[in-house]
Amino acid sequence: MTDSKPTLVSGVKPTGELHIGNYFGAMRQFVELTKADEYKPFIFVADYHALNTMQDAEEMRQRTREVVMAYLAVGLDPKDVVFFKQSDVPAHTELCWIFDAITTMPYLMRAHAFKDAEVRNKEINVGTFNYPMLMAADILLYDAAIVPVGADQKQHVEYTRDTAEKFNRIFKEEIFKLPEPYILPDTAVVPGTDGRKMSKSYGNVIPLFASHNELAKCVMGIVTDSSGDRPENVYAIHKLVRSESELTTIYGSNAGNYKALKEMLIEDLDRYFTPIRAKYEELKNDSGVVEEILEKGKREARAVSEEKMEVVRRAIGVA
Ligand code: ADP
Ligand code: TRP
Image (cartoon, protein in one colour):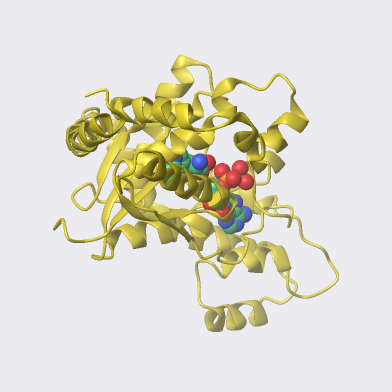
């Protein structure tokens, strides 16, 4: 890694069990992007962001570990990436406080995520209200050039740009660089076992780390309609793991035989995910590896962010 490459920053919240929709829709492209030798990537587990909704210590520990292992299992290489936990780097919350001081309440009240949360629950917590400022700190600390995120996070990156501009204007120095969002290409929505978008909130998922038996149970439960020869919900998932030309032959010679097609899908999914699952199991059994990676990430991220904070503290006059 050389320092002349533009910096890439992104965070992943440690919430919920990952499914193959997350994998094909986001994780895979995300890992590819960090592998491209074009950027210097900083990737972190956004545990302090998750604290707004996940307030159980055991669950926090467990989910954090899981998300780290999941990203390593799908190919994120800690050699290419500074991979760390947000809570391990105090500069994130420190800079968030500084941004709070220059940001107005009406401005934060206009954020979509805040408005949506408020509709659901008037007793919204301050952390949820302030979410965009912590995210701005996450990004601006590392002078990010690009921020790969899902489309729903675009406004948060705009808030980050506004905050950088405002800070630079108030303190009359170009301290922060304006980042660009990089919206992950939305590969066709992965359908769930009931044909709707695969989502943990619909209970129609195929877990990314399912055992063979769990996988078989999920696939056998795929809803099929009997109007045609080809079970569309089965096919739509199948084409993620096998070429369409091969599938044309397979679905042609098994027309109407849904059971055989589902059995083939089980085998194909199993084959596709076996190496990823094996890597995950290996990480699960190797108790020290996650800690070791996070420890290294912590040192690297602290060094970079601390240097930035010295500049920031001088600019605002506390140092
Ligand atoms: P869920 O809907 O299960 O709660 P999340 O909202 O946590 O999933 O999604 C995390 C990432 O995975 C997002 O970037 C989203 O674009 C992607 N993703 C989730 N479900 C799908 C799907 N069914 N098809 C394609 N991408 C998906
Ligand atoms: N808000 C992002 C999400 O919900 C997670 C996140 C936190 C993030 N900090 C970030 C993403 C900084 C990109 C950059 O997915």
